[in-house]
Length: 86
Image 1 (cartoon, rainbow, N blue to C red):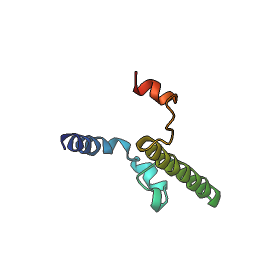
Image 2 (image 1 turned 90 degrees about the horizontal axis):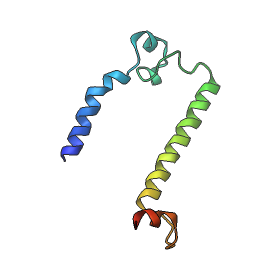
Image 3 (image 1 turned 180 degrees about the vertical axis):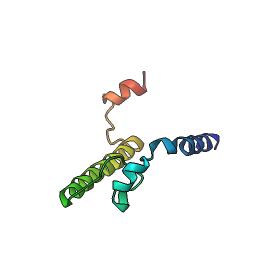
Image 4 (image 1 turned 135 degrees about the vertical axis):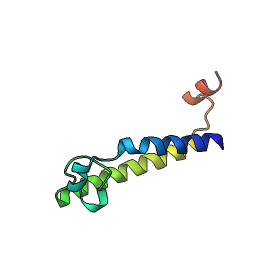
């Protein structure tokens, strides 16, 4: 419980460092306002690229969690066992 509170406090303290500056905030579309610096996506193809990147990132996180919690390999000579049973 203390760890969760410490992480929450750390995120709340540091969140102001990750926000976009006011000049960049005015150039952004509503959906990305306050998140990034610069002009933001300008055309349809920019939004397609952003969507693909978000999709790849989400799949990466999902598979990372899946294979971390329940790895599929049951072989005794798998490389993870050389580390886990050192």
